[in-house]
Amino acid sequence: MADKVLDAKGLSCPLPILKSKKALQDIAPGGTLEVLATDPGSVADFAAFCRMTGHELIESESANGTFRFLIRARP
Image (cartoon, rainbow, N blue to C red; front, side, top):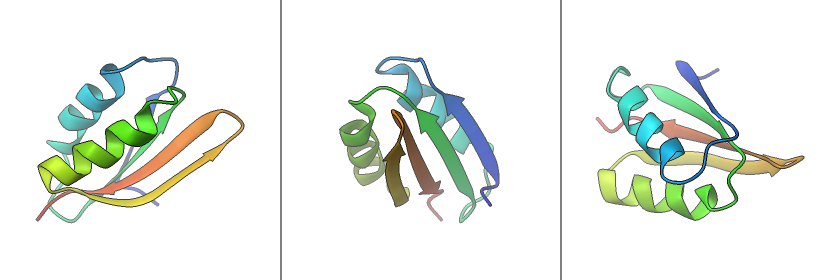
């Protein structure tokens, strides 16, 4: 179970990333954030976001039009 869940469904780029960036500020290093999104572009966006910020993208999956990302906050 993630330390925090962010529901970004229905939001378009760049809002899911911006809200995730803000949510990660409240998570202790090594903690996890689960993000739910419906924007198809979020798959590439979250991969790039994690690569550029040092956070770890642990899981990325989709089901029924919803994308789920599990991100570990950088230490």
